[in-house]
Image (tube, rainbow over all chains, first blue to last red; front, side, top):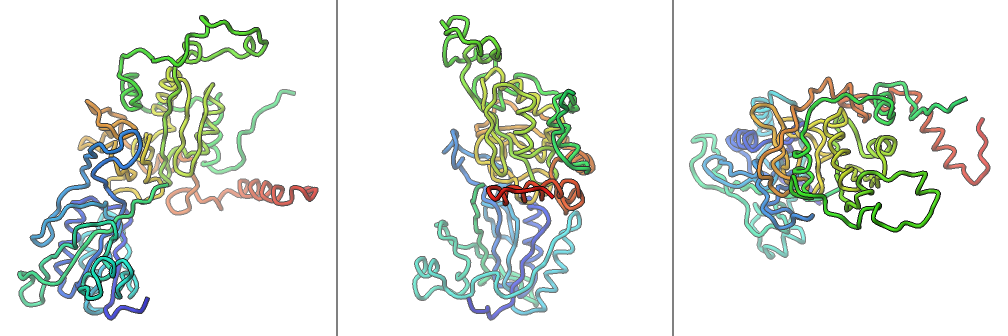
Length: 179
Length: 254
């Protein structure tokens, strides 16, 4: 995979985050001007029991609740373990570090920087799902099993600090492996 | 000279905890009380108060052939009554959980009768007659082999043992069978396969980090006792490994 044109970083907290902390973190991070895209990774919180004798029955879970990020509501389908971001330039990464320092006071986190955490070129799954002329903001965010599209969050601009609906996208990837 | 079992090598606290759990002479500390009804609810095999369903008539009513072994080995209460075979499964976090799958199997084989354990990387299942199972499960929940946060009763969907703990210290559970209440007490709201319970079952407060580190049977270099800190254990494991590797080539210990 070629290097992305934009820098990327990955926030890895020591603990799996609750929806409340995720909401706080995402609002802080999405409030930083220059964040282009974000992916939330973590273990899946299925809506129904996936297997076993109770398979198919409803699976109430307090961690699968709707959160609000800069005015956009979406339901958590994973328990946050990692947030990957694509940003405009390296100075934004330092702003994200400052934002994370404010959120993670009870336990530590790691901020990894690089250019290969998120795909920047269309993969086979991207191609199958969106065709040859896919939006560049969608590329690399694809979860082949998801039927709904990424969430659009109003971006933060240096001047107005938000307001318009823009091209900042966010989606959730599920990792439902079992042992 | 009478044989004295050694149970396991090692000089670390982890090794000692392992020996304690395996040694039936050692009284494991009872940390919490769970009623019989609560155990039945969480296991989810039958309704509390219901009679034990049977797989065959009681042994006393059967015409058993004469056999010296039958005189020698007395059946357990469950076997005597002809109970069906049911299971309990525990998942243990890798972050200083009080027990772990292999350790559970060793400990149960030393302590319980008429069981059939199955051991996997993150979970351990044990099958036996239902009447006996209730007692064994109660013992496993009430003693120091259980911690409400880092051990889970999980009959299905056990994913979580190798993941980071959640913010509140609970092991991840996709089905969220137990929740940490505002009062600090862990309550089971679903049975072990994920069917919601009529009422929550309390299993006590999570143990603190210092206690977990002191009572774990799991080596962990980051949050607990590192395996390399126990030289005797390393020596023992290396010896076993060497002998197994050389087996068939007439190994000689030097």
